[in-house]
Amino acid sequence: MAKEDESDLSPTSPGEELEDTHVLSQTEPEPEPIPGLEGVPVRWYDADRTEPYTRITPFQERHDTTVEFFYKPITLTALGFALAALAYVAMSQDLLAEGGHKRRVGVYAVIAGFLMFSMIQLRDGPFLRPHPAFWRVVLGCNLLYELALVFLLFQDLDSARHMLTLLDPNLGVPLPEKSYAEHCEFTWQNVWGAVDIFCLAHALGWFGKALILRDYWFCWILSVAFEFAEYSLQHQLANFAECWWDHWILDVLVCNWLGTYLGMKTCQYFEVKHYEWRGFRQTRGFRSKTKRVVTQFSPHDFTAFKWEGTVDFLHYFAVVLLLALFLCAELNPFYLKTLLWMEPEHPIVIARLAGIFLCGLPAVRELYQYINNPRKAVRMGQHMWLLIATVCTELLVIFKWSKGQFPVPFPTSVKWAWAIGLFFLVLYPTVTFGLPVVRRYLRKHHRKGKAKAE
Image (cartoon, rainbow, N blue to C red; front, side):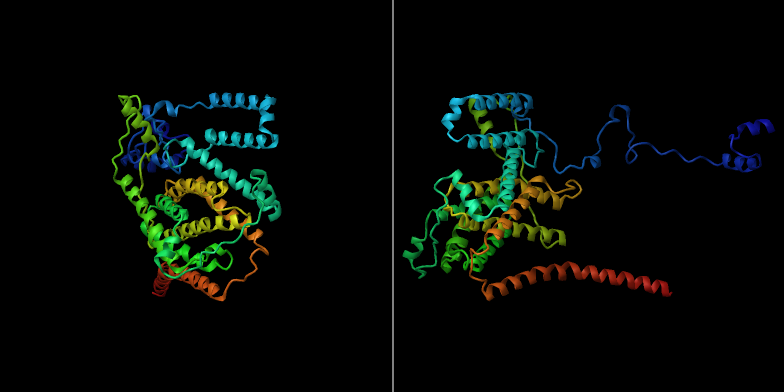
């Protein structure tokens, strides 16, 4: 029996612990834990499955296959066609002779090549319609504009004006400053005389902002804040000087409100719309197929934004950041067109406004996802990151080129107004979010002190 008992021992067990071993062997062994996640066993045929917590990506990785042929990867085919077109343009002397400026053709080819790479190889953003490749091109255009701004940041103002004449020979000529603060009597003739094409531009601009922000209060705050910004900067830009009724009636109550109202109604329509997408092949009839292709340019789904800036400090900071970003994006083109001597209706100015609108659509969606769903979006999206970089680089360019261009100093009243505004922006989160944290901290240490004393 001793030999049998000794044979039951492990090679490393000492003989004198035989009794303890018998005692332990008599106790019931604990059940082994079931392998898997939360008690669900992993079977052989789904051993390579991906659990939700491992898919930490900014946005959903689903592809819209409702128009099947539109989503097949053709990267090598596109590369072949692009190289063929590039070879034809580069080798055809007649085409280059007709083009005139070979350097300009080369720059256009570089831009086209970069945008093609962006369309094929950049990451997808939050939007699926009309196609993720379209938003990759938008991101590529934003990146090109940011690189151009970085280049201009290292140039002086006269050199930048000369470079723009290479794009448009009509540029490079000083423009007269126009003020809208004349004939400010509140009469029908004066009000009607102030109505021009820019009123329509105002309405369209706020229609776009409503589509981006998707919040009535946010749009109203931004609209009023922009008018106050015009008041505080009219000593630098003459076209910021307007009659009081032009600020608050034509701009805020008519143009801005109309654009915001129509934009929010569009958002509400998409919010309650029932989305049921059918494939192009499953759609019968020419009329139905045409309608299906047209609806490709409508949203795949729609998320209503609830910014909730008073919930916690993170939401408050996000709302203030977005407000400051939009104010800068609104003010920057006025300074750039003044410094570079461009008319408001110049194609470069229009392209910049349209580009910021297209970049803002996915950017604000990414910021909302980043703030409200941090477990899924562990980093800020690429559109928002690049939009912040672009607006800040524009500010740097404006600050550098503004030296000596605006000799009139800031009025004392404007300095006090901005100081009071910044004071309240800091005071509100300090009282609302900071003091409760300090109180909890003091209570916690007070309780610890009592416990130690007892």
